[in-house]
Image (cartoon, rainbow, N blue to C red; front, side, top):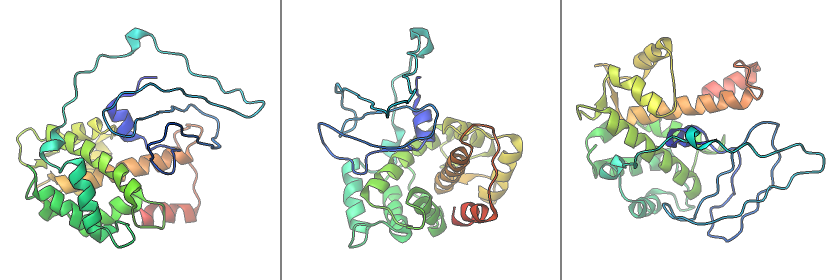
Length: 263
C-alpha cells in the first residue's frame, strides 16, 4: 500500500515505541485486533536515508500474512515537496529551546505553556499577527486531544508529535490561503480540509462555518489548527470504536459524555 503525506497526517499511530531513541535495534511487543496494519520504520533524525531489516513474529496459530506489493503503476509519481511552514514557524532546534523555555519544571507542556509557546512561534514568521486569535481554549483542546486522556499535559515526545502535525497543517493553510490574507475564506475551507485528509459533506461544512469561523465567515490560522485537530481526533475516535468498518457505532451514555465533554 502506498501512503501519501496526507494519509500519514490523518492517521495517528496505534502503536509506537514509548521513547524515540537512537538505537540500532527497536523491539515492540503488542496485541492488535484482526485487521490491516502498516509498519513504518524511521531514522532518528528527519530526512535521512538508511537500510533496515524488519522482522514480524506472531504467536503460534496466527494467520497473519504480508500484503501484496503494489504494481509499479499503482504508485503515483510525487512532485518534490515544498515546506512553506519554514517561513511561518521556527526551526526544529529553535522549537526545542522554546519548549524548554515554556514548559514547567518537570518538563511538561500544559495548555497555558502551549499558548505562550505558540504565540512566540507565530510572531516570528509570515503569519505574525495571527497570534492574537490564539485562545487558551484552542490550546486546551490541542493538549487534551494529543496527550493521554486525563493528563492534560504533553511531554517532549508528545509535543514533537503535535508539532509535526502543526507544521503539516501550516503548509496546508499557507497553500490554501490564495490571496495571502492569513485567513481562509469559505471557498478555501473545504479544499484545505481535504488536503488534510478530511472530507466533509455540505451539512458538516455549514456547521464548521457556524461554529469555527470569525464574524466575517473566515477561519484564522489558530482557528484552522483547532478545527483540524478536532475533526481528526473525532474521526480517529470513531474509527477506533468502529473496528469492523461498518460505518456506525454504538456507545454508552458514559462513553458519549467522555468523548464530547473531554474533547
